[in-house]
Image (cartoon, chains in turn cyan, yellow):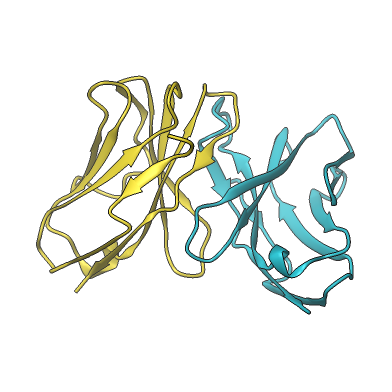
Length: 115
Length: 113
């Protein structure tokens, strides 16, 4: 069956450092991935997405890398700020699904940024 | 409204009671999703609506859970005979359509005592 999981449950960095959050997936047919940020007491917030025909996609201070060979994706945050402290989830649409709202989420990584 | 609104923010109920959780999606969004998030876990899909109909309810854990969206806008998640294991944050999300980004509300924290 499909699964989306994370290597590191926690990550602690200093303000200004770059952060890298990793995610492994098992369904080789997956064609779309999303990263969400969830702050305490709030719902998940869309950060960036990537389709399987791409290896890299950049946003504002964030970059997602996709390695289909090893079924791994990562989220890189440049110049991490205290406001980036949150739980980060990778997610993908359920296998065979056409809805980008019916998602399978990974366990999550807690990012803590120290001033 | 500007975003997905969920009420109440917090709900404490006694075991065996019935509860209703409300979701107001973003205006114009036709798709609406319910998720449940247990402590330390990622959200788990429960059900989604396209318009008024439940397009996929495969994530509902058992027949104590039910959701409606009678007019294609506001949705209510209903839980009968609540159990302590139902305690979680219930998240609602909406999107313009099935192939577009979903926006989440802040969730309702349900505690069954």
